[in-house]
Length: 123
Image 1: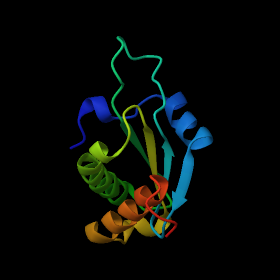
Image 2: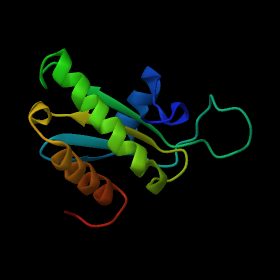
Image 3: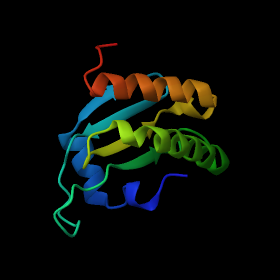
């Protein structure tokens, strides 16, 4: 499970990541990344943690399928949060095919999108 401090919850934070961040699309998902965004809601002088949020629409499937996709994506992001710059906002949007994808396919798509966004190649 993704720790509470790494969860994106506010609507305006989702909008900031989607509108002002970079985007990388893959077969089953689209990742929006706003690198090093400062969090005006965070108390203190320390660097805010990287936060991730997920968008899984009804086009992906019924409630059971959507929740399964969200659980898989949260689990995958938990291991990848440390790779991202502190204060980053990440929104992972599942595409309709994500409901039929297995865990390994989602992991490959997420890794490829994050690698592209972090400057690791134009694949």
